[in-house]
Length: 252
Image 1: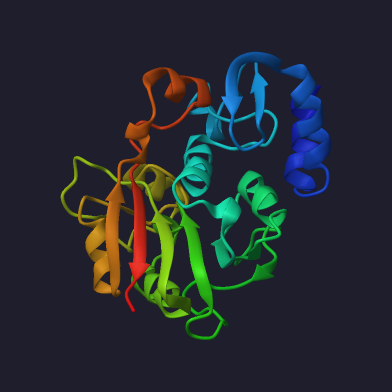
Image 2 (image 1 turned 90 degrees about the vertical axis):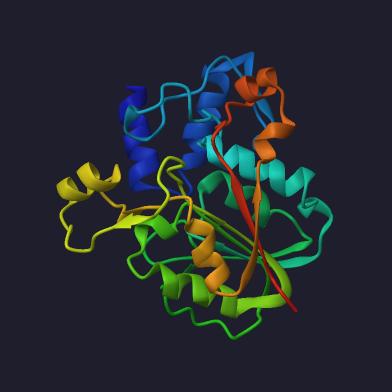
């Protein structure tokens, strides 16, 4: 029954009715084994992630995944976003992070996506409608691996970011792969899943990912933020130990 309710309220009514689903889960999974820093609540357990690949991944109360929780911790503890007056662009927002950011009175928040009903505006990342030097900060979290012309997308993000502004341009990285693998003759969902690990991915980034960001003009820092947490904190928050944050700055 709960699974049917989830499919109804989350998939068919992705914004308003999510609140009903999440409110129910906060009672159903009440406990003290795990803690979500986004919804700031303890739970008895976390739920499986997308496609049930990871058993203990998704927060029952806000649907955040490992990467979203790490991002929120980085935004709040390192970038002090709760105290910063910024104009922020969020590309293809996740539900949990967007809810938090939209509530911050100090953040002038805008979210865009080509298809997602969660986004505030419909935009193509390879041809954004915003003027040059519009935003103080940009979040583009696990998006570029879905876009064929990622170089154009990165150049657009650079264009709309103000000089001196920062961007977190995150993507899955295969640390064992020196060079990014992409083959645009692979077009079917089945072939892409076999080649790139997911049906809607168009490449696997290697360790050379940062070069694409630098070539667009960004100064890039590869931040091992996960190392700031103890093993017990990583387990309690359910974070990804392999996630490196790509923090980019547009030089003045």
